[in-house]
Image (cartoon, rainbow, N blue to C red; front, side):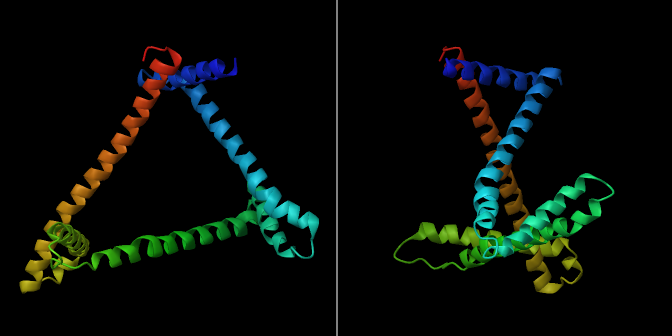
Length: 217
């Protein structure tokens, strides 16, 4: 009984979401509120069960002296609760600043270590054929030219054209044109990938409605 009931609930919620294609209506808003509420409730339960209890409250209850350093995140978390009222919101500025600082540091470090360094390393590729492998040489050449052209395009459009003159200026203009086309192709590929992901989700929902719910497929 539980499985058919879940199928009917999922199918009705899917149709309620699809009703937005006609117009904004109360059924769609109800499905939207249910989704946001269930996602928030799930996140709260996961935070309590997997973070607060095993990593904060349980160690403090077992050995408060040995885990005294956990009082710092506990205090910062309690200060965040003061943001709910205007009169006490200033107390939570320290916690918010700490969150933004740590988040920015992690984002910058991740961009450097996870993207920039790997991009620099992967650009240093051999352009001479080795062991008759001409395909990899072409791939390496496209990657190097695309990277250098993209850098030239951003430099040229950021004011570098004022300093460009002579042979150097001509090479910079040519590189910026090549880089612009590489950037356009990359953005097109990313957009196509996003569209295909959405289409895959739509096909999955239609297969669920026609197969698991109605049994047509």
